[in-house]
Length: 252
Image 1: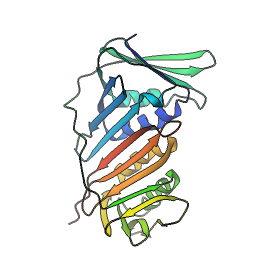
Image 2: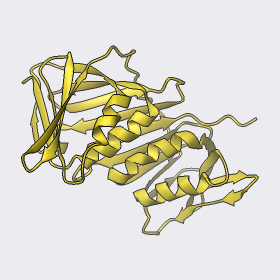
Image 3: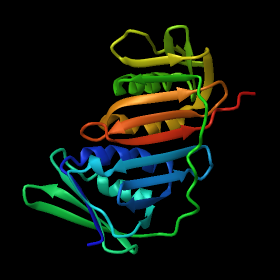
Image 4: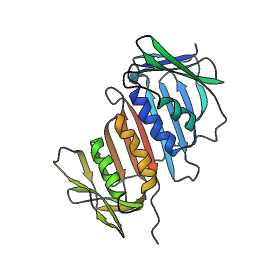
């Protein structure tokens, strides 16, 4: 066996892969001695997903002798991980670069899925940006804010002003402003260099927040008319992370 990665709680992978699979159609899976990484853009180049699973995130990790790279059809991966039960364990394995093996199960009952590796486009570099706002919130706040905004519009403005971090959506059906202030339990960290408010497409955000179900916390960074960065900490102690970058919506 070239590599083997085992985690007794499949839910972390279920929600992370499900969210990433809604944003990107195909992605590389790069396996090294340090862990597993994936970076991919969506077909429209509006969003990027970066999944980082260091070896510390796994209960057992047997690295490959040399770096391996698989090309994944994310729709197929999503269909598999959705089958994970609450009590399931998960194992990722690979003997070569032709296929990756996903095993789900518990208490001696195991299901094995084999995915053929596909050719993927060039792997994008993660952007290096200087953000004016960085906040960390509990996952429930992000889920509620995006779902509330979706009630009235297909665009949401994300911003920070004074001691408040907020989402704002307006449409013919009304106006919604989910917000949280510094010192609130839902706002874990709050750093603001200047007031910011930038609009983003809600359809992408609705897909991204699927990762919140398996996250310990969510970090959001943004700047005026800049891409939004949203990072979900995943794993038993938040060792791994799933980061999304979303381009701003240009308003006419």
